[in-house]
Image (cartoon, rainbow, N blue to C red; front, side, top):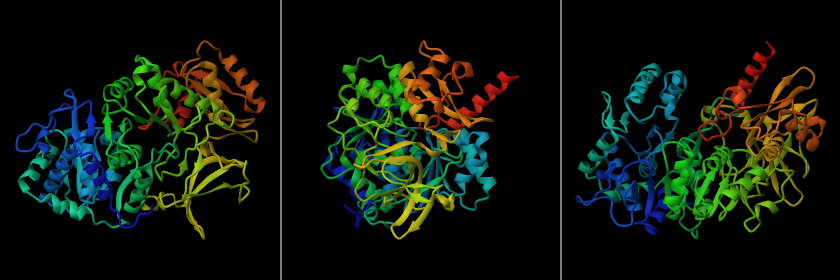
Length: 568
């Protein structure tokens, strides 16, 4: 199904009509009466009936009502449709409300890391404000003061509407609830808002999402248009999709949270937010208590859940689907997920900030131990309809043959065609087939059309001319020690670079035994230069970003410092 004249609100309306009195959002860490004024009608309590009494829960009708009131309040303050809103808040119901408001008012929503208000990140904060937002939402007074200083530094002439989550506001700031109250007094007709939301420009940028920055250390802005968003939702949430209960445990400023939130709402499903940021035990508790049916996990989250799980597996059997992504998925990752969630279908669902819905998983009736692994690398499935790919060897300047590794290039209307401010233009190119994006993934396409991502090209270690794929070594080490590992490349005067392994635990094995296990399985060309534990590096856990991907750039710096001190 193609875009046509469909608006984002038209799709959200499907969920609103399908499940008007069912929960749209459940926020475990916020109290039941939080922001109750925004959803009450004529003094009737917002909490009643089947809803959980111990936490905040809004139905679709209530979420829509709150969003209409907030939109009315913002319009009364002079915010016009088509404006830009920047949010710097933790996971909370206010963030959910902003997502619905942004669709109603046709805003460009830019959710960024709330930690960007901390002083060491002033340049980053100022860069966000060069977007000239019309509305800014922060958590508290500290964030408000940081924004005020940053606005002075960028010397913007615009005076944005400045909002805080709490009611103890800084000078010149308004509380989130106060804007909602103003909307109640404004009496703007809901039908006018809804009618206007149904008319949208397919080329309008409705969202700007920033990459994690793990590739270059510098997050890149990805402008998502209405057309791109609608096309993605039409694929992810077809008319026959059943409502599900999705755990929102990733940071709201990464692409996973807004994308899957909108998907759930289109189908009439609920979004369950366990905590302000990922916490293994609260996530496990929320899965059981609120009967979650689907969750998306990156490997480090999965292993954290496994290590914190004090819940018998039978109590997690309500989970019907676990989507793994955000990092390399191996046999060990799939098996760990199946053991933790024995009643669930385990899916390898890779995605990226630049685009999604690119692959089709054909193994719904295949057990995880019978998947066609490439070594220990899990397939990502088949190329989805409407998506074109080519695997490219840059050194040879040609498309590779099937069965040969190359960088995955993608062409699809579900991908952006440029970064914000045209940063890194070399990542995109056009030819007679369309606009292509260089993913940076090293892939392999088999003769029967199965695609594998072997690793990120930046992470591949070239040892004496041999390409060493860290993911394969990591899976070998994880299976041997029963823990989690990360393999990085360290400089070598003899070989150029050599693989070096960092383990969360040796699991009773020794450094030499781990090295021998890798040599025995892969050969001398893959030999590890060294193996250390997190404890030896004075670390409690792997350094991860907001989506819990291991930050190999940071890990390499720590290892190099450790080796430097060891040589002294």
